[in-house]
Length: 493
Image 1 (cartoon, rainbow, N blue to C red):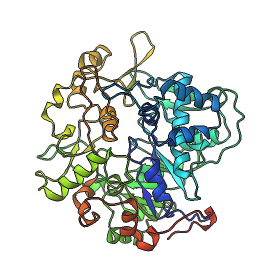
Image 2: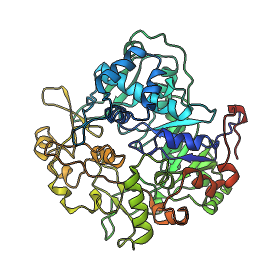
Image 3: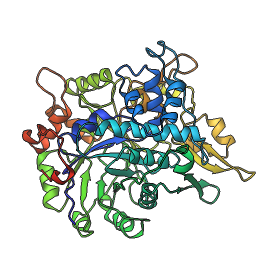
Image 4: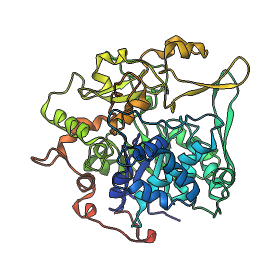
C-alpha cells in the first residue's frame, strides 16, 4: 500500500534546536515536523530549573501515563520562578551500559513531553530524531516518543540496523536491547524493559512508527533494507553539505588547504540507485530551493529534508539573541575566507566530521577555547571501553587529557576535540555555569545553506518564520494550511 508521506521533512537538529515548537509549526502545515531526542533529558531538567515559566513542560508531564514518575521529576528539578542568575544547573545523571532506573524514567518522560507538545491539538505527523552513535539513551528515548504516539523515527550518525526490531518490541512493551561497541573488548548489550522502568503502569500496545535511517550511499541503504532486524520504511540521503555530523569521506581521509575533509565522486549518491530500492527517499544537504527540490523529485526522490533554514527561523530552539545576531552578521558582514561554514574533522568526540558556523563569539572563532578547563559532565558522546579488570568504563576524547590517558585512551585522540555536549546546550540558552563561574561557549552548527539565508529574511525585520521556509519551498498556500485533519487526508501536497 502506498503511503502518502509528506514531501518536506524538517531536520531533527540537536540539542533542542528542533524543539516541539518548531516541529509543531511544521506539522500544522501538513509536513513532517521532527523533534530532536539528543540530550533530551538534560533539556527537560534544565527547563524545570529555569522555572518552566510558560508551564508547558509541567502541563505535558501531567499527561504522562505514569504520574508517580512525573511528580518525582518535578519534585527533584523544578524551581519556582527559576534558578538565581549565575547558579549552575543541577545535572542529570550520566548514562552507562546499565543506567539507573531514575535516569531512564527521566529520559522516557523527556521524550514523551517533547513529542506530546509537538502533536498537541492537531492531526499532523511528528517524528523524533536520534543519533545512532549515542547508544545508551536511545531505547528509553524511543519508548518515550512512542508513548506520545510519534509517527516517525529518524536516525543517523551510524548504521542503525537494530532499530526496526527494537521498535517492534517496544510497540508490544517487550524488553529490548542494543549493542554497545566496546573499545578493547566484545560488544556489550544495554537493555530497556518497560515493565521495570514504568513501575507497574498498565502497559497498552503502542503504535509502531515509520523508520527512516539517514544514509550517505545507496549501498548502505540496500544493506539496511536487507539486513535490518525489521521493516525499514524509507531513507534520508544526507550529503556532506548538511549541517551537524557528516559521514566521513569514503577511502582515506584527505584534507584541503583549509583543513576540511575532501569529498569526491565516490561520495556522491546516484539517485537512480536509490529509486531502484523501491522505498521513498528524501535528499538532505543544501537542497533547500524550489529548483533543487524539483530536480531531485524528477529523479525519483519523494522530497527533501531541510535543516539549516529552519534552524534560524523564529520557532527554532536556538537562543533568540544568538540567532538574531547570527542572521545580522551573515547579512551585513563579508564571510570569512571559505564561507561561513567550516567542516571540522577533529572537533567531535564521535570521530565524524562536524560542521561549525564561523560566527563571532562561538567556539569555532574563539582562540581562547583552548584555555577552557576540559570537563566531561554531560557525557553523551562518551565511548565504552574495557578496563584491565574486565569491567566496562566510559571515556570521552574531549575530557581532561590526563583522565582519558589514564583510562587507556591515546593522547592523539584528544587533539582538537571539543565538548559538543556543553556547547550545544549553550546554543539553546542553557549554558552551564562551571566551577570557575564562567558559562560554557556556544557552537552553532549549520549546513552550507547558511550562506544563502538572506533569501528568507523579511525586509526590515531581520528574521523569518518556519512557515516562510515552507512557503518558499512549497508555495504560500501550503504554508497557510491549518490542521487538524485525519491521517487519511494527509496527502502529498
